[in-house]
Length: 254
View 1: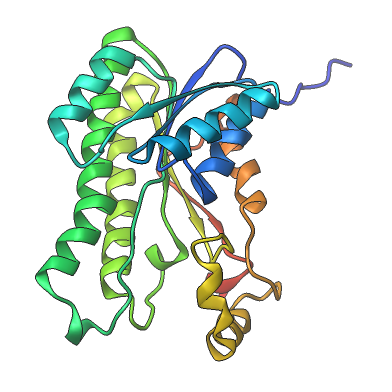
View 2 (view 1 turned 90 degrees about the vertical axis):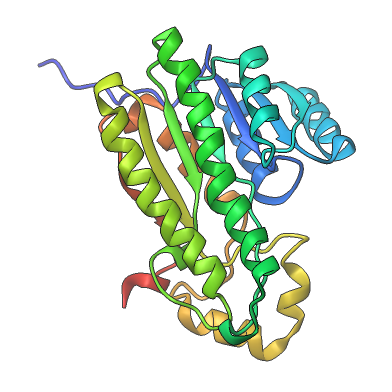
């Protein structure tokens, strides 16, 4: 009897770009892809962070390079992809948040969150895809969304707006790009403990309110997302497009 073989989770010979890659989730996703054999280009606005991150990946035996880029600058993004493309995998990770009640949100707050979380993600994806199409690359777009792209949250009107938009955008990308063999999906994490978020959890009441909704009873870690990105980038997810891999410990289950 001939048994079916599990499709490979390895990414040897492929190239990936990760935005916001200098620390936290972006660094972890970059490391995960490199550990699966992918050559990773780490992008951010802080040169020291991404150079240190790329060096750490290389020291671990991976293939990585750092590239300074402001993804909010559409002309710079176009020039970047002209010089670096094509990639097989794009991870749209860069994002921001300005938590406050909706009645206190300013136009500056709105622009800061929506411009980075949606506008920049859209045009980075577009530039990447144009290069993929020109080179006939069949690849994967992976957008780091949030459980807040599936539910609402107090003091998170802007963040929810941006992450719900990212979900819809990814689904539409999947439909546009399916004929070309390019897949588009999101990873939607719950609250992940990173150096950036750790100070928020010093508020005992806030941490308790979060843990009450995470049914598995703990905060997320960056390691919880590493398998997800490798899966969505790999041949194991060859029929997966236009969906969201929710890594939320059960938050959205009820």
